[in-house]
Image (tube, rainbow, N blue to C red; front, side, top):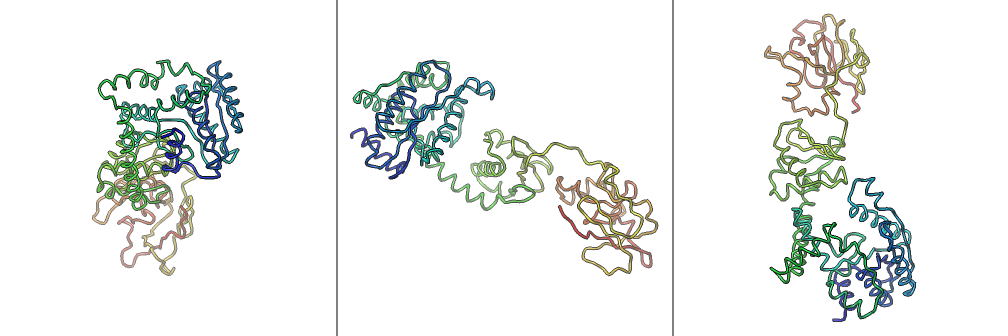
Length: 452
């Protein structure tokens, strides 16, 4: 099949092009991207395309000035708009502490997207081909990637399209020679300092000695894994909509529901929960750490950039990050003296103590009053305890654990106290020593309003 028709068929079958679209073509002046520009210019009339060519000067090589001029001339000859962006990648890499490869890729795609937005483009076309796909899959395999990594590059990844994933480097080189395109040679493509170059120049030729069809086999592996990953992602998304729910100031996931799933779905549900709070990629080891957290005691947590995961009573809570803090010790400003019936505000809560003649209200408690001159309304302190109906005492921390009150809420619960002895854990329990006996004077207590 004619090369141009083969590319056109791949674009049509993969849904990469539609009529009357504007396409930004990323062109470096190398054989692949010049061929892409030439092919699209020949398809332009058939698809009624508007083409914009973009060159990114990385500020690394002196030859880039000449290459930019060659790409501009190629664009002008084909009546395409031309944009050139200049950036200093080595300085960016040093500032971000990234490799030159990583920093260059990030800024290149940022500038391509900036250009696409400026011209109203529907997509950005890049010239990755089947040999590039083989390198990518092999690279991910060597890094121990899972299903997503072995998918390699997609023909379409949101706004990025890859029309050449259906053709090989050899086919492109034959097309370039036939069309006599002014190919520019980037000498860094032959420097073994870069891992991708070592894969292309050394490892893949070695692997062809064991399997001459290794490039096609790696491409087939990518196609198979893409189908598998699409199914698993769709199934995990359905489970995520069912089990990952808003709550506790973030998102929650039932531990029981999580552990009932196959391990592949558990990992994906963890990724869904984390993605609700942060765009930071999560590693396999971080996923495994969070899964292990699900089996631990309430209050255990894991932190990564942008999210805090807490195990809280058979739930994993995905929460915004907060500074670590110790148990609250009430300051004078958060201690309210209680000297009899009245309305007392502590933080955002209003606690009412009313005389016995006051009509009962919902959820009120009765407290033997006696003398109340030493009572205080405050938050928890180390050493606080409460007396139970069976005559024993229990530390406040143990009470909270037994009642399954999340750690994040414990510092906001008002306590009516006499020294370290708790009279009333507001909204939860009354000290048995303060239950009024028959005929004793008492007061009613309740929380009038609560704004958490």
